[in-house]
Amino acid sequence: MTRAIAALLDIMNNAAAPLRRRIEATEGLLAYEAPEEAVDEAKIFLTSIFENSSEHVDDRLDALKLMRKAEARKITQPTVSAADERANRELWRQVEIARRRVAMVNAGLWPPPKGWMNDLRRENYVTSPEGISR
Image 1 (cartoon, rainbow, N blue to C red):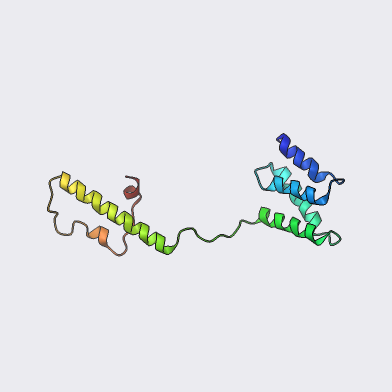
Image 2 (cartoon, rainbow, N blue to C red):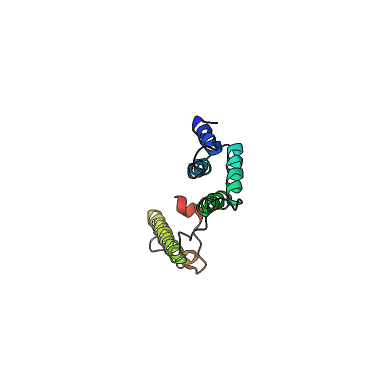
């Protein structure tokens, strides 16, 4: 256990410290990697606050927010839309067509034979991992 984690645990467990600061110390434990026992201790502390109806409602809510962050991953919107996916697929299709064209010219096969890119023009075209890594 690092000295910083030990200090945060010490502040969290210090009953003489203001509750807001103890909750803040708990946030420091849960926001970053910490040993399992330190995380468990922080969660027990937060639970004791938000389940205690005699605590100030702001403190209870702060404890609940931290606990929710620690126990559940945040729901986010996808960063790639279907339109982006289609545009990327079309871009890779064009890249693969260009690569094939260059390879055929280099091999002396120009003009190309009929249907030389039919597989790349299919509606259900999927970029192969090999096509991306070239």
